[in-house]
Amino acid sequence: MVARKPILFTFAWWLALASGCGGGKKIPPPPPALMITTPSLPDWMLTFPYAQTVQASGGVPPFTWSLASGNFPHGLSLGSSSSTSVTISGTPDVAESATFTVQVKDARNQTATQAYGVNIESLVTVQLQEVQGQVSAGTTEIRGLSAGPFNPTEWQKDTLNWVPDFRMPLLAPLPGVWQNIYSPWALEQPGGWRLFYGGWDGTDTSNDRVYSGTTADFFSFNNRGLVIDHGVFAHVNNVNVSQLANGSLHMICTVLQEPADLDKPAYFSSPDGATWNGSPPPYSAQTTDVVLIPNDPNYPGWDFNGGNVLLWDNDAWTLYYSVGVYGGIGKVFRATSGAPPEFQQAGVALNTLHYANDVRKFKVGGSNWYLMLLYIEEVKLGDTPSPVFSYSLSNDGLTFGAEQSLFGGSSQQDHFVTTPSLVIKGSTILGVLYGGNPVDLLNPQNAIYARWLQKKIVITDSFGSQSSLLGSYGPDRQWFTMPQSVTGTISVYAEDGVTPLGKGNVNLSGAQSYMLVLN
View (cartoon, rainbow, N blue to C red):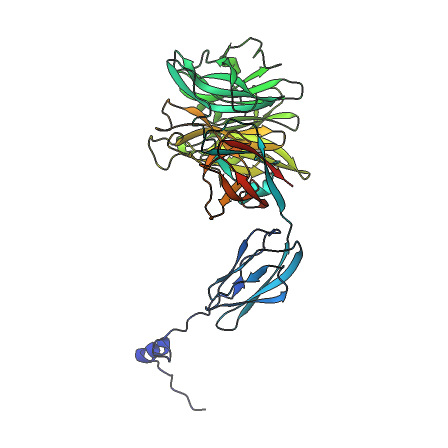
């Protein structure tokens, strides 16, 4: 057998091999697969002019869209497009259900399909009935616009129709040396609400205290008076109150302890709303009112300011207490108790630098839903952007999901917002009350403002111009600019701001109030 010489690879040959036979050109990777990325369409289209975009990704442009199978509802059609999307639009002329499949084809003849089903409902007819009211010239008022029962689906869409109350502020401090009120809390009562709030309501010293008043409609406020005095503390504020079926009231506040300069939650109770901790108002806060959490080793040394919430849940008390921006800790803790003010820590409800100011529980379709309102506090004065509110949802109250944006200030007067709380009537969220001022977060010029959750109204005259919304007036009314009589149409959407409810022809006049009627 003849021995073979070894094959020697020269550097030049290896370089040519590494470069490939194409003169150094690299083969590009194949384009991503073509697919339709719009998973579903709304199950309503109604009789409003409708437009829904179907989006595709991947593939190689241009794209050709078509209806692969099924039929569109009457009045709808598929628009032509060579981009990565196509619009289904039109005005359905009958109420019907339909299923159809949309197909997209790219330049390489790749195809992708997606099946859809829609249920078209008939719109109701909208009418406006004249009612008695006091409306200024050049203005029209429409009533009957408050939100319906709490709907977690609408809250998850992040399109809620929050309308600022045009009264800026809703409630101002009483005359006096120190005027600075915020931290509102509306407790539902028969025939209205008892409004608690903290701050300096025309007092002689700048020590925060807790006050209350009454309102039947958020138009007038009566019986304002001091409930909890600061006592041995520098401040008592950030109030929220729960009421049990036996009529007893249970309050959590934040107290500032000196000289440690640490904020802690404190607990106050009343069997009837008339006496607090066994004394007629104003009760003078004592060290024995401070909440104890023995199994939380960090509790004695941490500052818990701006976010302490009490909730009666499953026949026990749950305390959500927040340690946010300060120290960069960023947690909302949860503790439970059968006999406040002593609690036992039960874990972390939410990792966030925001402060929990309100937590409410709702029952929807047999499921529990917990809604938490939060705000972020700026440490540096004058920082931009200004503070904003957020919210988080939970099905068990133990841990909460990712925060969603709620709103911030609507004008220069409430540019720096703080301490939000819900206005509840039965199972309906009517709105949010909050403190605010025009200067900076810690400036002592706060007053109480309101944002109401309401149906969305669009008034269009015969020339196609829309009437300007001035704002809400309490939880059920909106005011529009109406310099003269207008003949046109009115479109009504649900409080999610996007779901059409009805449409009708209207004749409107200035200085007139109307009641919305959906037939």
